[in-house]
Amino acid sequence: PHGGAPLASRGQPAGVFERRYSLAPTSDGGMEEHILSLVKKIVPPLSGHKHKGQDGRIGIIGGCQDYTGAPYFAAISALKVGADLSHVFCTKDAAAVIKSYSPELIVHPVLDSPNAVEEIEKWLPRLHSLVVGPGLGREDFLLKTAKVIEKSKARDIPIVIDADGLWLVTKQPSVIQGYQKGIITPNFMEFTRLDTFHGVLQLSETMGNITVLLKGEKDLIADGSTVVTCSTEGSGRRCGGQGDLLSGSAGVLAHWAHTASQAGLITGVNPSMVAAMGASSLTRQCNKQAFQQHGRSTTTSDMIHEIGPVFKNLFER
Image (cartoon, rainbow, N blue to C red):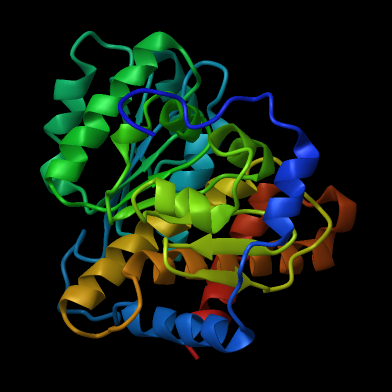
């Protein structure tokens, strides 16, 4: 794709996609285990010598009148994983609602202001990564977030794009194409809008070797050269919001992974792949443990309560 052309039409027969999807090359379990072992290396040690914000200041762009839960789930998940501060950039009518969910979040009611890009841009020097899309909606004025993404790329910070942010990518693929610190996290339907004919590896290649995390029965993670399967067991419960838990987690882990890579703590593996695998495994295990307690009534809030013990078990033993 070039410029603002959509990546794919919606007219391709589903059967063609399913055949290609099922034939996507995947790595063996050894690669999965290796990458999960690297997640442990990127987790910054806790220390009394650190200052607030040093372990991660994460920005979430999303939240409008109709969708206030998604940015909250992403932002609170980032905090629960270990970020020090979570900023939510939302519309004015969503701000009070999101603030009421949690006093821990820093909420900026700027998305629908005439100078939204400038308002967000002044915070970018303080942010370590950006998550774009949870509860963003599809109003035309929200598409100005494309300019924010460009500003963030200029600052070389990791960017995770999910949910309605992926709709923006189908309209303007160049907004994230080729950005090596970019991660997109489509589910099955979002994937078909991005690419209805090829597999996950081909989509990553087409998008300039950015990291693609395709959510499904088993998550597939590709970076243009390889595909790795996250086979961590989840559950049959698919409640709304668990993708926001994943994107918020990925935002934190992407910051940690690229920082660790620059310090030489991890080598030979794309840091974005490490972040995506960590977020995928964490989310799936949170889903499993919440389901064991709550069964069919499991919600994303139940999963968020599991982040602490699951993270410790997976990455701090």
